[in-house]
Image (cartoon, rainbow, N blue to C red; front, side, top):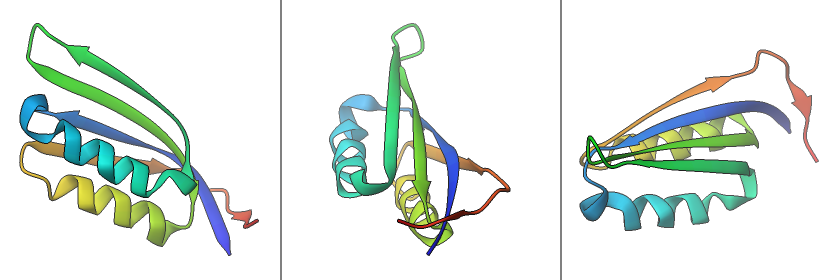
Length: 87
């Protein structure tokens, strides 16, 4: 298995509507999550979440894709170019 390390940036535009679903997805993919930082930006009524991941391209892409398909949620990933041998 070939893993990469990366970051998924998430902007939740309507936290009251989407926060529970975002948290459920993050829990579902907890096996690839190294850590996360969430910042509620009350001035703009959004939440910004940074998730550090270590997983295969397919697994990271699946998480990012599922997040991005949620209404009012934007997600983008940035991955390292270095490939690590899996566990």
